[in-house]
Length: 309
Image 1 (tube, one colour):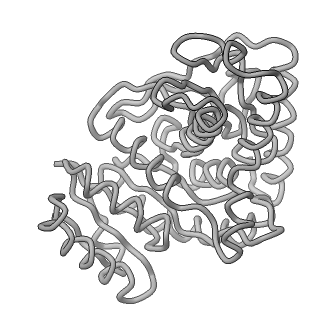
Image 2 (cartoon, rainbow, N blue to C red; image 1 turned 60 degrees about the vertical axis):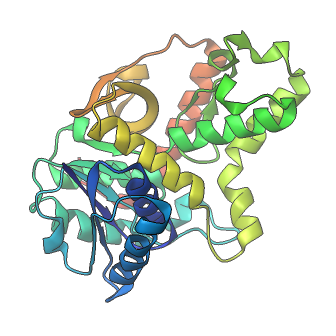
């Protein structure tokens, strides 16, 4: 049985733990530096098991030693966005948190795959990749599943069509310059234009880019966690169960899409090895320009890390 450790027992981390325990097939370890927080949340989840019929194989802890030998480590630790705050505003405080976590978990689980959730996502994934010394196949940022899921939701809301019939592709950075690829999105294999006007499509693209900020504005004191938690669990299942699923994810690029030395959202094939393959789509000039703008925004955030490389 695979061992999955989740770092950070806030709303995102505890929601991932919930989804993972419902899915079953792995041991869940939830860790938070706040004494008792992870232990209490896991105890609550375990007690739900006999009622809801899900796994009770889980541990809550404030000790990183309990993560030793993990197959998969999901890092959610960090400060969430507040109203008016961009993901880029978070870079300094969350960089320090990610450094601390990576230094604790990687030596204890040198064969693990890391899934990053901390914002600004692409920059924190890059930082974890550089600090961990792990191959790029084993440091993956979760964002594309979430952003694509939001786009699917908005299309379903506009059309009334079941979102299971809707496939979307959202690439680029997890932020205001993400790139929803309308040309590579469809409803039951048919172009979006069969069901939506251009005005509707433009509105959906804009709302997808603003998806996280929209929730922040409503919540006022936090950010999304149900959909991010489900997205992380979907990615974790593809890895733990060796499903060979294709999902958009933030990975370190080495020339793909004309980009180097950056973590960026692109389609990848996921298996028990992590990223089996980076898939390069054929883009038109408009899409290439959108990808470049997104990369430029990420690089402006990366500059605040002041890494030597």
